[in-house]
Structure formats: structure tokens, C-alpha cells
Image (tube, rainbow, N blue to C red; front, side):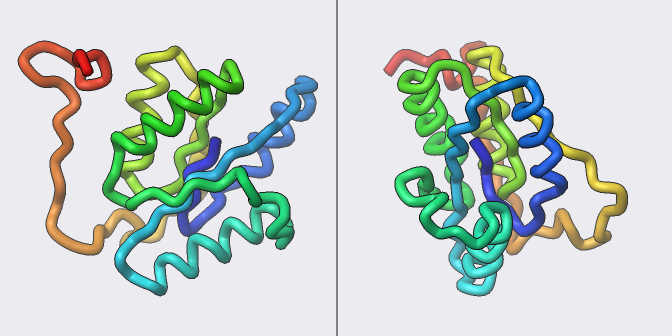
Length: 148
């Protein structure tokens, strides 16, 4: 499962690694829906580059999630994990999507892979507005372990 962002950060190397191990890759994509139309276009453009410009490759395998909704990402992963078995996560999208993936990885012992870039743009981590906080543990209980 790939959270799509502005850069693929050598995602192809992850695909190649799993292909060598004989894994049947059924890639699912999570595309952020930020309020900025330019960012939306950049993410979709990047996704089309990742699937070699084949829109059919993402039909029925793409979910659009608010760029600030870590819980929805975690919920999607839970559904995919239940239907597909073991999953591997590649968090290349917004930081809240990465948080949702990281919490799912911790809860279910999933592989979480991030290829380290060789060089960082100094403005890479500059967000679009005021910081947002996420509660991941409340009164000693991890949020993904809280009763429904």
C-alpha cells in the first residue's frame, strides 16, 4: 500500500525487491485530498508516473483520503489487511498518512518501508499552515486499542 505524495522516492526499488522474492504485488494507493488544487494535481501526476501512465492500473485500487486524516488511513489498512492478509506499507504521502500507516504497522506488525532520499530540499517539510497535533495514546491506552 502506497501513500502517494509529491515524490516517489525510489518506490521502484521496493517493487523490485518484492518481485525478486516472488511476491504477487497487488498495490493499493492512498491519494491525499489537500485543499490546494495544485497539490492535488501534483499527487495525481506522480501516481500516473508511478504506474507508467496507465490509469487502468489504479482503477478500483485507489482511495482518496483527506491529507490530515490519519485515522481513515489506518481504517483503510485494516480493511485491506483483513481481505488480503499480510500487507507492506510505503508512506510517501503527507505526514498524517504516514502516522496512520505507522500506527497500523505497530498494531499488526506490518512492514513499513521508506526509501531515504539522497538530498533533502530545505523546504520539503514546510507545511501549508499551523501545526496539528494527533493523540495516539489517551489515559494510558493506545488509540488503536481503544474500545469501539
